[in-house]
Amino acid sequence: MNTSLSNIKAVAKRELIGYFSSPVAYVFLVIFLLLGGFFTFMVGRAPFFELGQASLASFFIWQPWLFLFLVPAVGMRLWSEERRLGTIELLLTMPITAWQAIVGKFLASWLFLALALFLTFPLILTVNYLGSPDNGVIFGSYVGCLLMAGGYLAVSCMTSAITRNQVVSFILAVVICLFLILAGFPPITDFLSKLTGKPWIVDGVAALSVITHFEEFQKGVLDSRDLIFFLSLIGFSLFTTGVILRGHRAG
Image: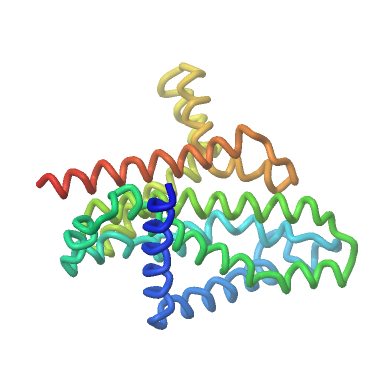
């Protein structure tokens, strides 16, 4: 067990150093913070200053859409870069298992995204200075954001293992994550209802929507069903990544 944890820690450390050894990490953080602030204060039907209450609802409502493009941009290089440089064979022949490498890389990238969310703490200070927000709701929303980012990232990890082209990996991840967003939208469910006429199919597709599960976190509700959904999405995507990488190794 200690050896497994040490291997995962070593891979995660290697990956984090790789992020901050180039300007990419800093550019991502700046873009995320600027876009987050812009959409919170300037855009939407209820921008922050027009809302008339101390709330970060206008910040969290945009996160599924910001993450749709920014998280795949972080995850697209996880395995495609290794394949392009030819270092994936070296990594997988080291005294670590493929699963340890996958978890290490994923945790490093997830930690990087957690850092990006943490750096939005001035928004929390602002709303607490201007009023008396429900910090429980804010905390629940941040937990939902972190889990949603993990889900998107795991999908991006999977698509990155499929191809050595980072652009292709990015596009595939965006398409899959977009489906996970739109699955619960009324136009989609209405179309499926008319097409199939089977409620269980409609309910099954709607249950795959990250928006449906994220909305509960935005209310400050930490429901076990929503936690299980995001953790299952992460687990399934990482398991699929392992299957893909073992296929490359066998090939």
